[in-house]
Amino acid sequence: MSAAYLELIRIRFLMMLAYRVNYYSGIIIYVINIGAYYFTWKAIYGDAETLGGFSVAQITTYIAISWMARAFYFNNLDREIATEIRDGSVAVQMTRPYNYLLVKMMQGLGEGLFRLFLFMTPGMVVAVLLFPVQLPVDPMRWLVFFVMIWFSFLINSQVNLLIGLFAFFVENNEGLIRMKRVAVDLFSGVLIPISFFPPWAEKLIGWTPFPAISYLPSSVFTGRIAGAETWEALLVQLVWCGLLVVPIVCMWRIARRRLFVQGG
Amino acid sequence: MLAIDVADLRKQFKVQQNREGLKGALKDLFKRQHIEVTAVKDITFQIPQGEICGYIGENGAGKSTTIKMLTGILVPTSGKIRVNGYVPYKDRETFVRGIGVVFGQRSQLWWDIGVIESFRLLRKVYRVGEADFRRRLDELVETLGLEPLLHRPVRKLSLGQRMRCELAAALLHQPSILFLDEPTIGLDIVVKTEIREFLKRLNREHGTTILLTTHDLQDIEALCSRVIMLDDGRIIYDGSLDELKDRWGKGREVQFQFAEPVPVSELMALTGGLDVRWSGENEFAAKVWIPKTLNVSDVMSRIVGAKPIRDIKIQETNTDEIVREIYQSGSVKP
Image (tube, rainbow over all chains, first blue to last red; front, side, top):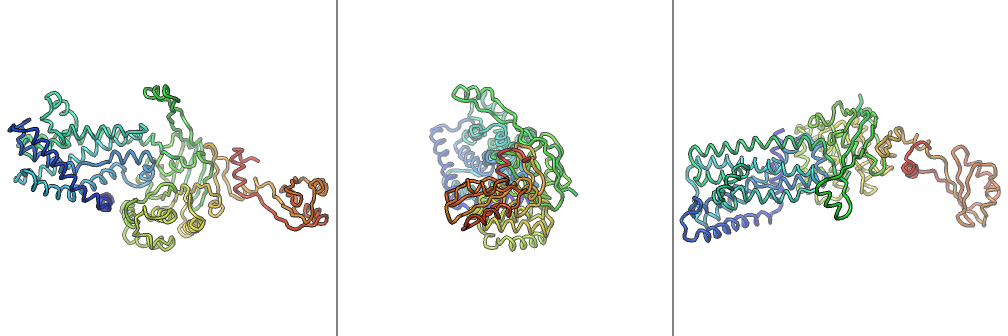
């Protein structure tokens, strides 16, 4: 069975490669994004040495690395699931001997790996040449970072599954999908590091799964979180990953019972 | 052994009711109204292995809903259901290994990649061994003529080409039951015939049980030894197509083309005492309806001697008309 899931990753990889223009423009988009945020932050800093505990060099690295992580964990599984539910093609998926949600996860993984290797790695090389990005030399930190973005992928995809499955219960969950997208980018620390928020907001956000998606791995990578705290951050990710399984399974069970295939 | 065994199967849906107007829409924001719709109402039937069974009925009669329960997609509200020895919705992942499903209106192939890539993926999904897969694929490629299509992306196939690929995709794992939901919809007559021939051969050579829904009664005539007819969620007929025709095909119609003007009243007088109905088309043509109980020759003999006939056409009521009449009356009892 695992052969089938591996094959699904490969197929998604192939599908992404099928559209070449998308591929080249993707690399440019990543460089532009990192550049735009770099110049914005430079302007905000002005003469200030540090803001929110970040030096200019740190924030530049933080931005670059956040986007690199985002390339891997980001996917549109919520929209894909919602579309399949709405147009009824989820019915075809149910006639196959595999777990629909796992299949979706694998497709997301295929997409993530594609973006990480083929968009982000070249994008990162260009970014390092253009902007003062300081990559750590400690191999351990690289290793922990890659373990952590693996969990970022899991948590983000779980949130997406949850939002996508809402399409079983409401006729149109487009609004919810958009809201989630903004929430993830804002509260996960891609746009603004969590430590820049006012203390009450920082605390509130700390109770959501969003910082575990991006803020924690990027902080570990830039060295803002180090030593024992690293393991704590990893633990937070693990806990969220486990917790999110519960509502997904519940929702899937209920959805199976009330599955209503659109279009007869 | 029975391939499909269904007893008192029922499926209810909650359908959202949208209220009218702006006021209604605002009310809907806070409280939704739902109504219960029963799509399938306590149906019972059995299909033995190796049978080809047609499942027909008007749009919205509950055909697709039944198929979806039989294939494990939908969970029934109540009733007993066993397919291939499994309860479909309970042991879904094991159960679906033994069945093949084709939905005429939905593709099960991956849109952006070559057909062969889809097939390879399905091989892994169904855990078919490489040797079995090769043998099966060669057979399907040959009988369905897929050779030139294998390396094209699915989105570049015509509907007929795609349908042939869909069939192959559903059969790669050698299922013992094949479900087809409107497999010939939108296809031209050549492809339709090819697909019918293929299904017949599949049934003959591999003993595959086939259940198909269709609106094309020629599919049924060409393939099915048995027909189940559904109306408003209930089975109204279950038996052979011939029997249905016998029961409903009440008579035939004979059209006459005369060499000289003949008034209908004169024809009626000629066939006086016989239970026939005349209707005139123009002064040279008329047609007569003759019930099953009467021989056509009885009527002919009276006309042939009396009037000069240029042409005669005899028409039997065809299946389309029979079924249309049944749909309209909603009952099989004539």
